[in-house]
Amino acid sequence: MKKLKSIALLLAASTLLSACSRINFVQYEQEGNTQEESRWHHTTVNGLIELSAPLNLSEVCRGKAWNYVSTETSFSNWAVSLLNPAVPYVVLYSPRTNRVQCYQVPIKNNKAEEEKSTSL
Image (tube, rainbow, N blue to C red):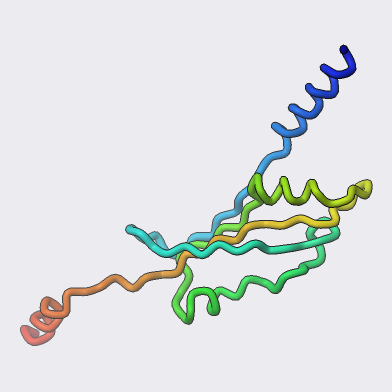
């Protein structure tokens, strides 16, 4: 019984201590709702070898500037990586989630712009 409690405590501690991480890159501060695209990025050998292609921001944003990029290890990424066979000190599969927001050009009032340009 004592051994079972120790194992349960160890599993609970390892779950709580296996932190998720996030790195945010912000180019423009922008208000409002922007469309966010989310993709998984796959790596192996402790993240040294990329299995999926690097994130191409010009392709994701279709030629527009990027507003915000986030790279994170979420709980679902961590849970999937647990399904892989264990090798001491080597993580064979480590997925990450990339989120991208593209810069939306603010809509200007064309009449106000025309009046300013004609009054000069």
